[in-house]
Length: 471
Figure (cartoon, rainbow, N blue to C red):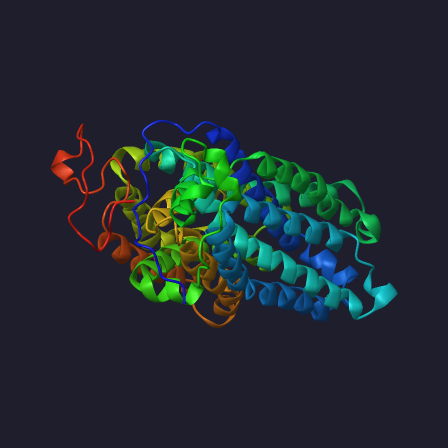
């Protein structure tokens, strides 16, 4: 068993890192491809049921069974890619993940129909969705670690906000592309070949993202941590380029990371679960629910969801920058509190059947989830040696287990429970997240360890609590 080195806090970069804009583009490019794929699969579900499955309710059930099964593979991708990134580097792992995502998405667009190969069509779809789920799970933790480690200390929240912004942008682009293709062709043409267009468009998106990631540098934090494992003769003094040939760090064991960081992972898991449940129920389940129940047309439901997602894309960088100024905790407390207090009444108002209510409700929720400054907050909970693996345990598992099953659970609750059951589920996770934030310490580098009365205009000092060391 490898001896675990002493953990060092997240270094505080006093000046902007050269090339941080390229790092921002590299980290966020995979986000756009990932959530673009997520959106086009959800938006094309009825077409896929008719083309790659037997059609009817059997086809729809098959498509959503494939979706649910793929979500279960996300944690495996999160842990495997996280351990690889902590040992060999973030950049190489990110390039592999985006290549896997783009290739699998394009391959779905090339699948033969049910009429040509029968049951092999959904089986091939399941295999490709498994590849996507693995790469998506790996993308979550590693890209957050990469972006935050490349960010100047006082801009981590702002750049983390841009990361969340690209999540919403990828979903909006996917929904918009699917809706545009469906609107431009008739049903026969859509089922014949046009449904493949959104999937094939993942190729240029993936190539652009791959180019950006192969051109980006490895993070300074990883180099700094890796230097401790390199023999003295392998790293000439003053020559940082020699690090590229230095030995890799000892293997990171996910089980060891879980055991030694259990309380931190549990706290981060709860926050990620609240965010994922709210996001997926509102922007995946609600459009389908109001369409199925006849409360709104598909076009109106998708348009309102797109406006909500654009609200998230616009508000996320603002809240990230705000968290750099006043701290992560106040912003997170505000977001959790809105979900707890306003989540149920806003949901009941939205499903009443009014198009205006649907639009305003999506905007309210879109702005609220933008206040979950998780990229910066979660990354600052872990040291560089275990950051990608820790994020995989917390964010990756929560997004798969809680977020991935939230739409299905909401569907069951909508049929067998009162209308308030689905938003109550979100509120329950939001309460747990609120408690977790209230019991945690501030992690923003400018404010960590500084009492509220001394935060304005004062430099940060090391916190006295050993439970949450400075990052």
